[in-house]
Length: 411
Image 1 (cartoon, rainbow, N blue to C red):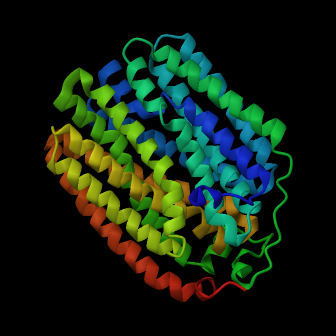
Image 2 (cartoon, rainbow, N blue to C red; image 1 turned 180 degrees about the horizontal axis):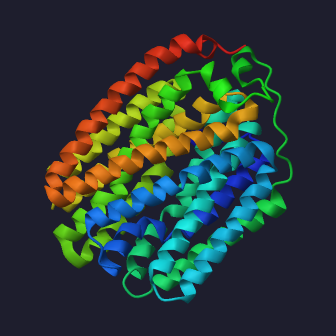
């Protein structure tokens, strides 16, 4: 109970947004199965799937920049509502037509809208939370999303073969329900006034472009690059892991992958409050190092013990611990070091850089997987991950020098 009580005292909008994320996640049945849809339903090869995902990722870059701009320029709450409505429409159409290239295009449009609204989501959480509460606020949102996501991957695995249309319909209903909750219950998103000395980097600088601000905070780019390496590696979990499970376990691969993904959510639900409490004194950069190290450990276990199902779940537990540390660090890191007037744009830029790196990463992994072997692809992924771990360590050293005030006791 002491662990859960740490979430008390936040503004009520935090709890509504948390519940909204939970409802949306309850219907996240389609996207986790994208690789299997392309591979098993549409007969695409691994390298072709990598090409498609990489190209769509590149096309999504301007979408994320637009999402950041509108987050800083318009009503963040209504941005989320409007974009959700587009996603709902796309999924309803997907449920109504036979699976085809049109379905895939509509899936990507829906996904692009969900990505475009993320800067608004992230900025709202930062706006309504004091610096001292920010990690708890982001932790709560992450926890809520995963509470809803616990059963959806397993359900998606069972619907995959014969009832994929129903998965689309459930996704539409969940996003629509979340939008209604936010529309009627989120009333006040007025930014808080943080007056402590540690908050000096958040002072608004309206009228200045994003790059002008970044030039004075170049360490931000190093952080985005380091964390982009983590997310690029983590996407391999949704790409190469299902391919290997289908290759090794045949038709049962989809069910195994769904259950592994559900374990991911269960671990998030159990350990997010625990790790938030236990590691509250660890810096954001320290958590980033832990996250990258755990990612490499999880992938190594999966690589070494393919075919032995219990080790898949062990690897997923370790991967998920790493994911928790990265999420706990990312929102507070950017919000505490960037002007409040630029929160949406920096989030959009971070996603663009992340997408670019992830697209190249995934293309390389897919090419090696298809032309050499699964083992060679995993070896490359782990080696590149080691490079990004060194980058995270360099970040921790430089960040302490660049943002000295944040490492001093709060006023």
